[in-house]
Length: 206
Image (cartoon, rainbow, N blue to C red; front, side, top):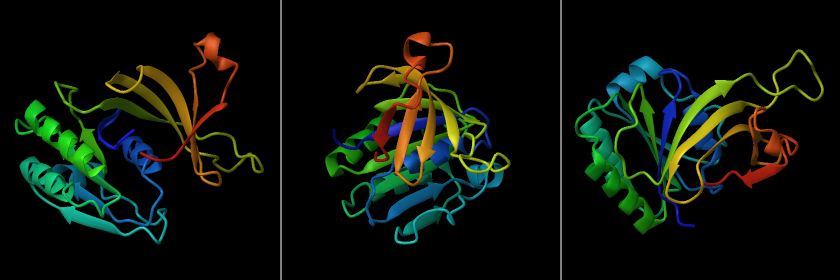
């Protein structure tokens, strides 16, 4: 399945869960990642904490003011097949971020086979050409296997509310750093799938 454009909507404007989930899905290569933020995303959600990323993966950070500039930089970056991924963060619902803009990003990403994530802070899920659209919220971490006082693996509540590539659904996801895998479990209310808690796993790659 070729890489394409995915959108992620954090449950709260400053919730880092969408960024964390996007990072867990990036292709596992040493190729650089182009990361672009607009001014309000930097001010309200903060700059990404890069200390936890593998040191061998270069991150090209681009700070811009307007959403239009972010979209231009993302589209231009997707022309480069040497990138592992392009991540863009946009605040709110700017008029420039319409169906045509997202279609251009999706087509560029698929033509270059480069993973592309658009993080939508404080935004409404309006019409979009993104192939996968997620609502994401942070959850308490999983229990630590060796220390009950320490946080375990990070967890997120995932809602794939629209997709052109797979059935929509809801999951609790956790990232296993040692195995480099994202594990998906059905919410507790879904008894049909709850018995397989944590059994489904996917290699952390976009």
